[in-house]
Length: 468
Image (cartoon, rainbow, N blue to C red; front, side, top):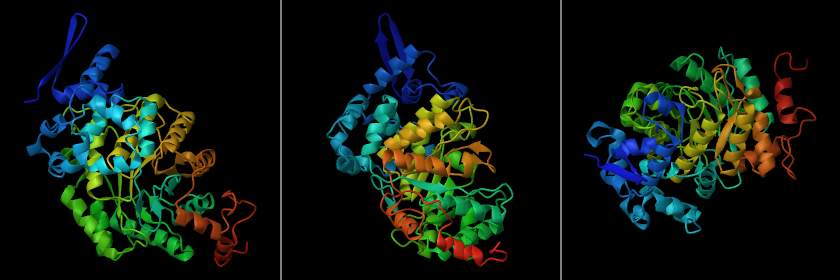
């Protein structure tokens, strides 16, 4: 039975019935927690919960499961695979001490890498609740997570992009035009990733062949992915399709993932199948996961947890399967879960911090739905903050507007902006390809737009009607 936490402030004593309630009440305000009925009732109660949480020893999270061990395979994964040796250097700390240590010069990138497997998602979520935005940025910047498939993602000083050429009817010409557009703006080193409008195995194979042909024809050091259900991708592999990465949306509880139609064994089977294809050239990280605060609540699978803690638990699933890419689609579910630009910004920084702290190659879909109280200026702010924080990758979509999924995100131009203002570069292998293809100048890495690069022009001229 979880203990009751008490904190006396003046003549009033606050009570929190267990870690679940304490964590929820300590969370900065967001509409999803209000919807779930777990939010602090006042700013004072939230501050008291944060002060109380600061005094909780980190060891408590190893003995007091927020979701019962016997009921949830994610809890079992977290507990059974906890690295006690990695945890030892920080085992004496409280949550508040942990915050101070993370912000100190003692927590170098090398030290953070050594302790990451000793940190549970609940510890990461707890310390996150005590941190200001600048704290989340500072610590995330120190957490370096590098992965590789046909290029190397996550190196310091680099920012990659997912080229997202979605089309409302999966029109091949429309998708191909968006891919060309994105490549000409230096996008696509994280992945060329398509959300299919028609989600079935036959359509996935068709799209995989398209992206595979583009990558092979131009010898692009990148990878492709069709964001279909993991079981569809398994069928694509069995059919001989050119699968680079296996995709799946994941959540932080077994019940959430069951609502998505998979479990940990499904992911293990898919990872093994993808590794067997041996399509990587510089690495073998073959999984791609997407997450987002609110998914567990929307599936009624949150076990009374606040949505930020549920989200952090999803990173335990991701960490298990050594993915190439993980990104939080931070504002996609809607204002019922993250109401406005301020809440979306906070959630994006939280997710990026927790993912990086746990050793996950974290990116972010900096986005919002059309009925949210947010606009593109809010996204500019979050994009810039994530760039400063060392985010691994963001999205690149024509004009910021996904015409298939009907939400607003970041454009090809936005990626150029943040690379330019922060001095960030694409993945090194991809950058060299951009220079060879006459898309970038070698000296200053600026985009060339005087004319269509000759390698592309030759290919287009070879098409029927290409001379016109």
